[in-house]
Every structure is written in structure tokens, then in C-alpha cells.
Image 1 (cartoon, rainbow, N blue to C red):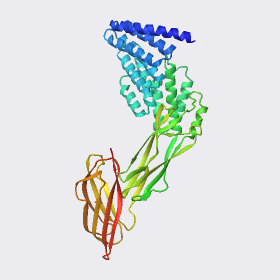
Image 2 (cartoon, rainbow, N blue to C red):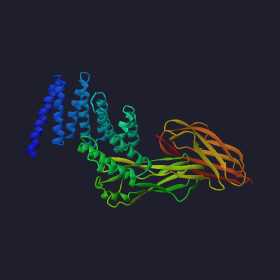
Image 3 (cartoon, rainbow, N blue to C red):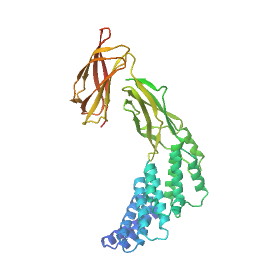
Image 4 (cartoon, one colour):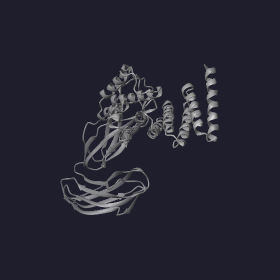
Length: 450
């Protein structure tokens, strides 16, 4: 077997050398033919896919050089570009495979080949699946839509690959697993999906359906036992990642799957302005694919100032077997932040997103949350070294505040570092009976973005 492979390798190498000599002589047509023959040997017989991809790449370049002389050259270019895409599927380089399928679709549309529309749609379909396996479903949908107007509507919509694209998109956007099961049933009852489908393209399709089923079988949720929090309170939430249903893959004959690894690689969320981050899970998080159970991912936040707020949705990016990427998203947790009872509150509210090395306005709010009057209020700030006052004053005197009354003013600040910066506040006042209260000291966190 090894002797046979070595013989093929020598022939492939000699064919490649001849292709390069012909290229130097600018005999582009013959050069392209020899590059293609060499690529077929390296790819189909030797499984040396990266070398094969380069052979098909140079064959494509030569055919494009000749394109203006004979439109059949665009047809030939499309064929070798599709082959190059197949080689990149074999190496799991879906980004590069997508680019080749995209070029192949555009090349065939430049020709007058009898089956040009069908060939173009096939390449568009493979490119979409490559987008999806990179975790880019929305980009894939937008990509397919860009081509739609170049075809007869019936030809485009009735094509089996476009039907699969549509069903897959519906399944993921509507969280309906049945759409994927319908795709699998339809494929299993057809003798072929497209003409001349290769083993690499079939693998691409199967892996696409596996990732889609994985996404739909898993769930990710936020769990909280209350919705009202006091200012400066730590908000501890548990997020539950449930993947016990993945064992159901053993029931599928068309797309059975033994998972080698499943990891959480990214963690992103949105929060309201009156909430800041306290703690997030350390990444990557490896899931026990042998157990197929659930994983709790605790996260913590801090409430900063009163008002309506929210945490989420929280989005996880997961990777199957170190290759296939997809995302899961939790629901949003709505909450309310209130001031502690009987307390003169101080709030610092950024008027736009605080960004490092940029001056931004900070609104200071002093609120009387007690039942009695407060007078002779004095407020003093102490900034860390990484935060500078650009306009305003570090201290303020307020004559009086009635119950539930507040006083506001703005200062301009600039941070030279990112992250959570502590601002120390010192407040003292006189109550309605003339008693001195304070000084009270509190540290108000200010989250600075990069």
C-alpha cells in the first residue's frame, strides 16, 4: 500500500513540476490542466489536502487569466474552486472553504454553461454551511439573500440545498427541532442531494445538522430568587447549562455523534447602566460530555444606583470537539434597584459610556431617603489616582433636602485606566432636630471601559 502511495506521490510531484514549468512559459491552459491533475492525485489518492488546495488555486488563477478568450474557462475555474473548497473542508478550515465556494459560485455565473444556475446554487449552499459552522448564522442568511435576485425565483427556492438552508434557519430562529428531523428524513429518502456530491461535502452537511441539533437540544437559563435589590448589593445569579439530551444522538443513524469535547469559550452579556460586573466564570469551561447532565455557571453583579434595571440576555459561545462553534442565549432578568431606608444617598451616574482616556460627564445625585428634613449637607469626594476631575469640584454644600427630594449636578472626569474604579464619598448633614449626622463614608464603584 505504501509503495503504491509513493508511486502516486512521485507522479503527482512530477505533474506539479510540469504545471509550474508551463506557468513560467505562460502556457496557462496546459498549466491549469496539469495543476488540476496534480491536485486530484494529492487530494483524492494521498489525502494531502493542503497541497491539493494550492494546486487547485493555481489552476483557478490560470483559468481566470484565460477567461476573456473563452467563457468555458470560468466553468473550469468554478470546478477547481469547488474542489479547493472541498480540500479546506477536509482540513476543517471553514473560513477558507467558504471563500472558495463563494468564488466558485461567482465564476460559474460568468460562464454560459448549460447548468450554470444549479452549479452556482450548490456552491452558495456549501458556503452557507461553512458560515454556520463558524457560528455565523446571520451572516450566512444575509449571504444567501444577496444572490437570490440573480436566479429565477422558482429555480432558486425549489433547490434542495436552499430548502435545507431555509429549514435550518427556521429551526434555529424559532427553536423548533422538528425542522432538523424533517431535513434528515428528506435526505435519507432521496438517492442523492445534489449531483456529484463529494464525501467532504456530505461531511459538511452532516456536521451542520449535528451542530444545529446540539444547539436545539441544549438550553441555557438564568435563575434568580428575587427582583428587587438595594443599592450596592451583590446580585448573585446562577446560570444553568443543560445538555443532558445530547445522549439522544445515539438514536440517529444519519448523524450519529460521539462527542470528544464540549467547551464554553466565550461569555457575553448586556446589563443596564445601574448594574456593574462583580464576577464572571473563568474560561474555557470544559463540560463533561460523558455525563450529559447540567452545569451551573455562577455570575455576580453589583447594584449601583436606584432605578429599573436588567441583566441579560447572557450569551455563551461553545465549541464542539475544538472545531464547530455555536451560541446559546439566556433570557433577560428584569430587576429594580432601591435605596436603603433612612439614608442620605449619593449616586454617580455616567451620562455616556465611560471610556478610558476620554473625558465624560458624571451626574452626582444626592437624595434624601429618610422621613425627616436634612440640612447643612456636605459632600466630599476622594478619587483614585487613575481618575481625574476635569471640570467641577471635589466638594459640595447643599442647604437642605426635604424627604424624597434630591439635588443633582454634573462634573467632568477622565480615567487613565479601565475596570472598576472606587470613588470614596464622605457625607455629613444636620437632621431636623439640629443633630449632626456623619460623616458617613461609602465607596462607589465606577466601571470604565477600554
